[in-house]
Image (cartoon, rainbow, N blue to C red; front, side, top):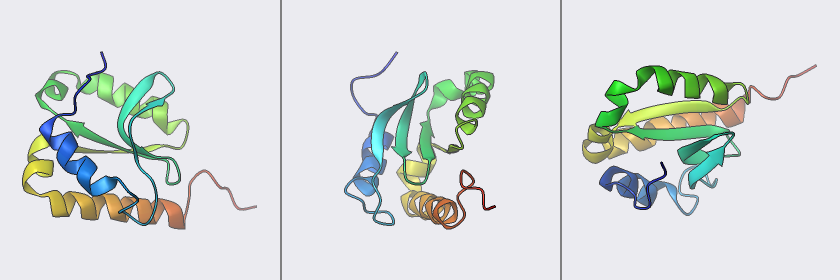
Length: 113
């Protein structure tokens, strides 16, 4: 079920993602991909950023299957837990920036021939 309101962690991260603050590219929040809703999605880098709360401890198999389905579309999923976003936001932003840069530099969906 899709939540109407963002969690505190999602709000905190969204403040750092919105407005093309990372690498000058756009992130969308609660973006549909196939049958899933991503917390945050950057189409240009084909990157999903998920923030995992306590519930994710009980649904590891579901999350793994969800990731595998998205990877079929060359979408990379990176996950952070609430604690990381709330207490280590600069490190989270650095990880996201590194992932975006890596994917833009050598996109797996473009095969050189």
